[in-house]
Amino acid sequence: MTRLIVNATVMAAAIGLMACALHDPYRLGNRALEQHRYEEAVRQYQSALAEHPDDLRIRNNLGVAYLRGGQHDLAFQEFQKILARHPADAKAHFNLALVYYKQGLYDRELEEYRNTIEWDPDHFDAHVHLGHASLAKGLEADAIREYEWVLKRNPNHLPALYNLSLLYEDRGRTQDALSLLERYLTLDPHGQWSANAAERAAALRKRLSSHP
Image: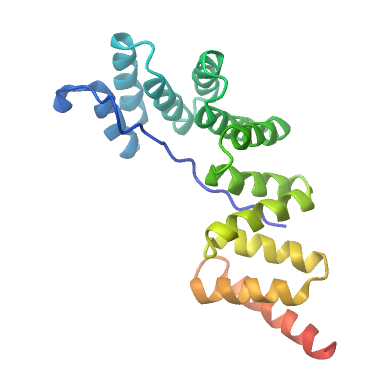
């Protein structure tokens, strides 16, 4: 089965912003991060931390800059520092899971997605990624549970629609699988996986017509 990966997102706090935006290293770091200038983002966040060493949102974004820049060990260190002070920080658990994914430590990745959800049960991206990770590990029941959770909250989530259709098909839920594929094709008729989805949908219709 195919595992579809959703890119990590940075959740910057909207309160407690420092003054003088033009010269605020935190905001300059955020701008650099958005523009994929990761070395500059790291430099600005380090400058911001020198002035505000206890600000966890700065440290979080520094970890994200390291992560996106491929410096996974440094990212790991920043997220661990956050969790040492604030073990219930769901955002840090989620970002740590992404580090583990990049490092190929998939059991730890799964554990951190679960930790994220324990502290923030409505963390949407954690449920999405836990579905992907469970599917990749062959934990089909867990993957089904997560994708169903995702689709209840966003019925148009393409990776969940596609992957859940695979799982339903494997379990003999042919009509349910077909319904998901048809919705997928309605939403994304010319996308990356659409040709494959159309072939699978045609095969499922043939199967249903031969076994009414």
